[in-house]
Image 1 (cartoon, rainbow, N blue to C red):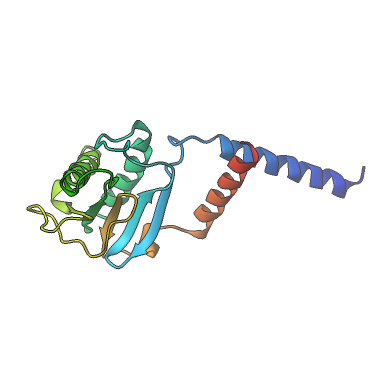
Image 2: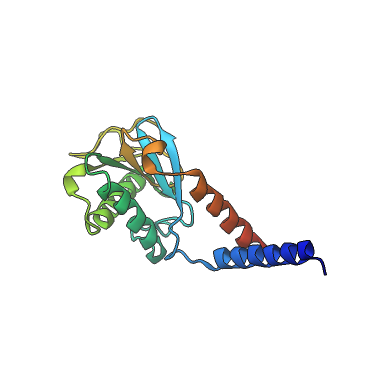
Length: 180
């Protein structure tokens, strides 16, 4: 065998090993964040799972890595305030959904506070609120299907979402699709 062929086989084996390792990572190792620019700041949602069971305001256990990562982002930026933009399943009455949105927002706030984010930096909105709760902010846009946390006034460049992280996310997703 030629040296070039051996080198190619070694690189292919290394790449396959990397893909398998990325595919095997669980949520505790990599909290997947969906980060986007919002007119109010940087919007962060969970890419891996919904935070709540349908019709419930109890956080799913697998959402813990998401909150660990978001709370770290907030602790690293103590000058920034955050807005929890909560949504419901829209499966019951308007009153039920409004209450569910508010309780979900409070559950998200509690998860961040227990991870070291100061309560005074947090506020919430709900997608269908006609009049916001005391201490809440007025919604700017209609609700989206998933609750999100918005770091007010920030840009995605502030979040250190770099090309290398996106590259490895792409490799991981490709590896997961290969090994399903």
